[in-house]
Length: 403
Image (cartoon, rainbow, N blue to C red; front, side, top):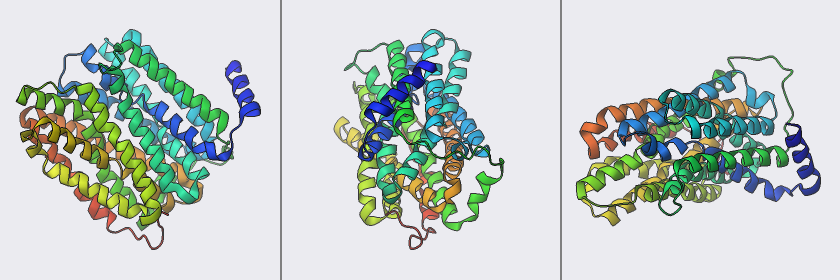
C-alpha cells in the first residue's frame, strides 16, 4: 500500500493533467473497471456446459452483488461522505482481485458464485461513483459527459467477449488476468488524477436519505423511466450469446458468437456517445424517449427477426444494441439534475441499486421461458420500454433540462 501511495504522489506531482484530460481519464477508468462485469459470461462456456441457465445465473449473481453493494453504499451515504476517488480506487482493487482469483477457483461452482458476487458488490463503488465524479467535474455538460461515461461502461461490458473471440485467441484464464489488470489500472488513474472531493465523513449517517430523494416528482419520473429501461437492458445483453446460438441452430449457420456479442453490445457505447452529444441540443429527455421507443419496437418485432438472413438479423440486433442503452446516460443525467446537490451520489446509487434489482427479476423471468419460447422470449422485454415511456412523459423539462 505504501508503494501505491508513493506512486500516486509521484504521478500527481510530475504529471498532473490539465482539466481537459480529466474526462478521458474517467472514461477509460470506467471502461477498465466495468470490464469485470461480464468477464464471467465470456468464460462460462469454458467451465460449464453451454445453456441459457448458465448465462442467466452467472449474470444474476453479479447483479445480486451489485444490488447489495449499491444498497449498502447508499444507506451509509458512502459516495457523499468520503472521497469519490478513494472509493473508486479501493472498489476497483477488491473487484479486480476477486476476479483474478477465479483463475484457480472458477470450476468450483461455490467459489465461482461467491467471487462473482464480491466483484458485483464492489462494482457499486465503480459505476455510480464514476457517475458522481462526472456530475461534480462536468456539471454544465453532464448529458454529454455521462454519454461518454456510460459508453465506456458498455465497451467494458462487451470487452471480455472480444477477448474470447478467435481474433484474440486468448484462453479463459488470460481473459480474467487481463480484465483484472485493466480494472486495477483504472483505479490507480482515478486515485492519481481526479481531485478528491471534500469528505463529509464527520456528519451523522441518515439511513433515510436514500429514499427521501423520491419526494421530488421529477426525480420519480426520471427514476421510474430508468427502471423501465433496466428491465430490458441487462437481460438483452445477458441473452445475446444465447440468441445467436439459437439462430445458428435454426439456420445451421456459423455466426461467431463471441465476435458478434462484442459488436452488438459495443454498438451501445457509440449510441451513448452520440446521444450525449445530441442531448446538448435537444435535451436529455428527448434522447431518452426516442432511444427507449426504438428499442421497444425492436422488442415488439423480435420474434420475426429469426426469419431473416444472417446480415439482416445481425443488423437489427446491432440497431437494438445501439438504442437499448443510449438512453441510460440521459436517464442518469435527469436523475442527477433532479436530486439535491448534497445527496447526488446517494441518489444515483439508490436508483442504480433498484434498477439492477429489476434486472434480476427480468433475467430470471426470461430464463424460465426461454427454453420453451426460444426465439419468441425476447418480446417479454417490451414491458420495460412501455413502463419507461409512460413514466418519462411526466417529467417536466422546463424545470430541468439535459443541457
